[in-house]
Image 1 (cartoon, helix red, strand yellow):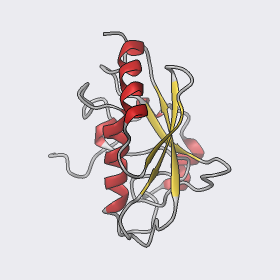
Image 2 (cartoon, one colour):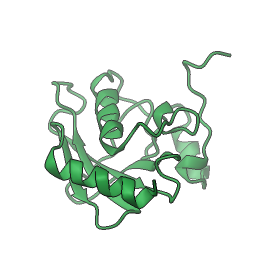
Image 3 (spheres, helix red, strand yellow):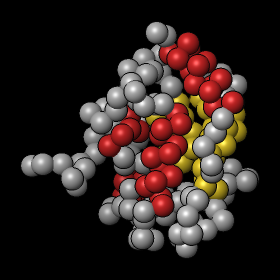
Length: 153
């Protein structure tokens, strides 16, 4: 199935029903979509905040993971503080990694995973080396190989 056909199906489903705390902001084409997410529990780190996600799809989607980053906008002025979210919006999440991605995932499941990741966070901090990473990284998120702490060595 082509990326466009898959995304058309996903878009129709999202337009019919979105999980609580997830909003479709823009899906004018089948290359870039914008979604807003809110943390639904009473986590004091994110209470009342909405965060914008930018999804960039390659022609190999859903075989290849979309590039997903947090971005700022006039209505979503902050990147969430989280030990797996860099200050430039790049997300270190195995689901978005080449090895962790599966075509069974979709935009909705990615948004829900990120909601869950924020919900469970208790640390108001950035990943170690955030400033150096943001300053020196010139790679696209999909080209970064993160080391996940739960990997077996």
